[in-house]
Image: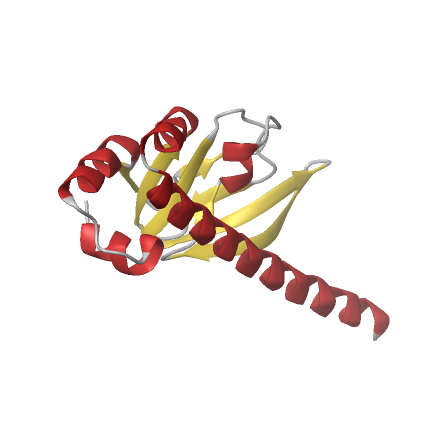
Length: 152
């Protein structure tokens, strides 16, 4: 696990040995190959992934049609809604390149709730920032599509 990257990009503080041990129990390092699915639309796993390296495509299926709705790359989060909500995954996330990711399962997230409030606050701030970035990007895509429809 790359603790320097986690310190500099996610938690924004130096981890002590106890925090490193806790993160080693909470974050699972997972590798994905091109085409592997990190998340499948409709599934009920409550896992969130922080992409350390690589790029993923986010697609939404409706009435048999698959629509590309976004990307996630190094530092991006996918599955955040699944971690906090009871609903099934709202989209499919597939690796476009080899991906190294940190998986946080719901049960592991609960360990953070009980184990270290400072680290939890930093992680939640990172999740909020990443989610707001994804929403801003989605808004730009939607505006572009709507403008294109209006130009017809």
